[in-house]
Image (tube, rainbow, N blue to C red):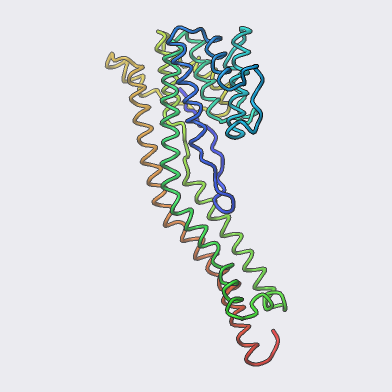
Length: 340
């Protein structure tokens, strides 16, 4: 048995705002849904891909210029659709054409679609139904990412604000007429405060980012391996053959992301009860996605408390060294007429 773990791109919480991780799965889910609708209408895969390719290209067949695309990701998606259309027209494996999403700069969810397509091809499962199933799984993943981002937005904003406190203190002292910058740059004590405070601020920012990254979605494609196994079983394949198909497809398109034991309990239950294993697998996948949502909410709640550690150990001492200490030195030297 196997479990798939999709790679998660680390979020930059401080500095540049993190991108919306839910957009990629949503886009790929929409493409899978449109492809499923075309196949259900009776189009062959090559004709369906050509139709999708036509919707992302100009009438003369040339690709749209970058300015006409919504963003770089849309352009990368259009390039993968064109590649899939060419592969289908030439009788080549479509899964191989769309599986190199990372190299093309497209969403990592394309690798999930490639895996599902490969499973459907190898098992002989109905392709339209498989695409509909994987689209639903990707929609759930996008929703999970959106919920996690919403839960983490408050703690992340607090971390950014707290990290800016030392710099605000320096600016506030200058506005009050105190030579805080002169103290920080004008003597050994000020330079020591500047270096130590900056180092503490840098450590606090790194610590905050690490805590927020760990609280983000750890397993975004929750239940995906069960959905893929259910797809393979829907063709009438045996459990052993279905597991082998999923293993081989995931090794090609989602390498290094497999651990054993995901579906063994479900398969054993189906064998004991004589129940359809595919339906039990889908039910278990839904349960896993629900558990992932609850786990994400719990991690976000814990994050609000854990962010107090870098605040107390790094940010507040940096605030004292960069804001309060120079202000006090400036007051003392201004009063006594001495130099730091």
